[in-house]
Length: 338
Image 1 (cartoon, one colour):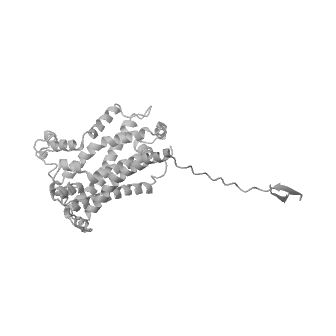
Image 2 (image 1 turned 135 degrees about the horizontal axis):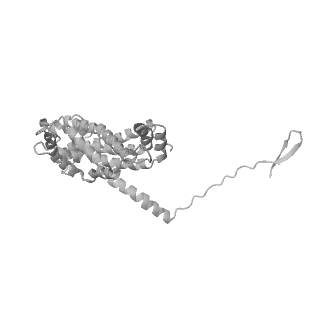
Image 3 (image 1 turned 90 degrees about the vertical axis):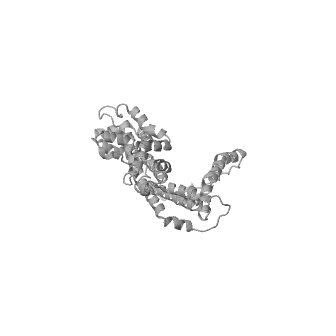
């Protein structure tokens, strides 16, 4: 052992052992065994291969087709570069459809999420302001009734509401005229460009508000009741409690719901096709997915339709990215302590 000499306060010399250098212990890498290799192959390699084959590869194929004039049935594909993209961005009908999709992206998620939050709050913590924190009376019944429209297939919802909106024998006009509103006799809700989009958006909101209400109910149930009781003692009203406690603590649920509703709004093909298969009056309800379908299967221009699909996919990715960026900029990445 090495030693070194040092002096104390009295000037006396003392011999103390020197500090030994730290010993670096290198961990040996364990050799790969058949168990490890098979585990990675089955639980990582196989799902990754399936994802690449059925998700990524079709996107690559669609982009490749968008650079050709392929008709969808001919064996030849002539490379034309980005001419298809130049055509769709100079096409007034496609730009109209894109504008309708943007309107849906702005309106549908906001309206659906606000209504779902209100309903979820009512059935969980919207009961009496005295005693135990609880929802409205018979809240379980309201929860089931609100969720019921989501269990109906989208095409069935579209056909059903198409009959309700029927101008001659529809239920809606019958109720309104029965109430003395004769101006709604034979009123074409889906045939008037001023009401077609609004009527269609109402149907979509009606079909999804119950599902997201259940999603938010699950999030609110995870919040300790003591927080709501403390807010009640401090004199916070229902709106203040929702803004300061409920929304911050279920922010991840709200972000997920917003992204899903935005993706639905960018598609919306089934609802639009069921309610207004031709795009509505003056293309007021036409969306990009419908125009893609018409271009591919009615006009036989699969190369041009593939370009529309690529634009739709890129728009969806941009929307999702914007939601994540806005959530981060507004403090959504910070953990909320309970």
